[in-house]
Length: 158
Length: 246
Image (cartoon, rainbow over all chains, first blue to last red; front, side):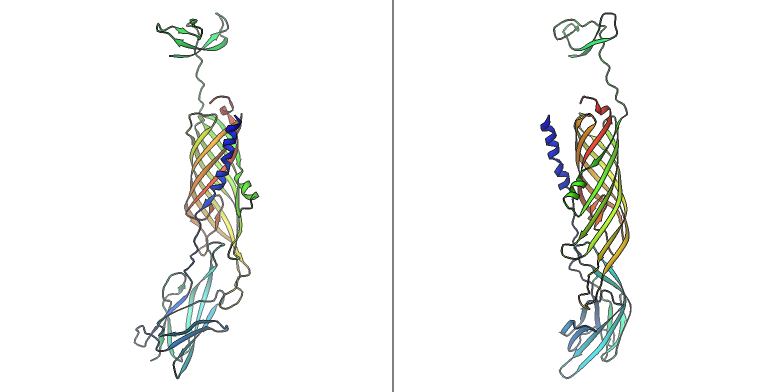
């Protein structure tokens, strides 16, 4: 008689062990980046003829270091600031041109699990730039999230 | 061929002296174990009436207590009540409170929630024995409406090197899910029973804050499309099952 009850009791831990679930995978490798492409004055995509270096204004962070023949660029955005200022330095053998690209935005913190890093997504409100070697900026997609899309078109001077 | 017959106290009495087993010989005469003929006035005992509502029970889950004692990052405290229909079908209602407080292993992100949940459904006893051990198969529908918090006060922007704390309070969420249940139950003594069951859970609907889902849903478990769970119950059942028998 007693053995029967011990048998049932021995099965109790099974109920505890069963308490498990599908674990979430962090969106992980996907990153939230601002993406833009360069366009010439005729409205066609183009490569920059020389190297491009991008830094975040107010920091010593180099976001892109001497990229040759840049065609498309990805940049991280700040988590909490209302506007990000990027310094785009285009340089060749005998010249250096620097323009500021200012992107105004709203920020949305995004989380999946305590084990996943918090991501911040953005909605671009406005974008403009100085005019040393860049002619103008046009917003193509305002939402900056995990999607791999182009957000800005940067038209360069001839 | 045979059966049970009740012997009267005396020839003219309706009172029963005892119940004996009989066999029927080739002439169709009923005889007891010693070969004595059983008079035709002896009556066979009436079958026990099987009432539609044959009892009720309440109980509590001990898995949540074990998980809490073991330091689990989530646990739930649950009680249940059920009816017994013909000692075969058991409509059941479960109520509990689920809590979770957790900080990530590789991050400083913290999640917290504490909210009630409800489940309704039924169990069916698939064992021929109705009063002793039972083999239960059942189904539940669960619901919880809850609020949850996410925080990380020390987070810093990795590029701009400025503080970017996370402090999200009282985000609201709700979920409806189903559970397929498989369980066993043993009668310990009279109205005291123990039972455990395993549950396969699957979400029907889930609503939450657009930019962040809850890590844990009270009553369901850690958020995912599918989930395993289980309870181990101490049950107090009153009614016909308290009687001896199978």
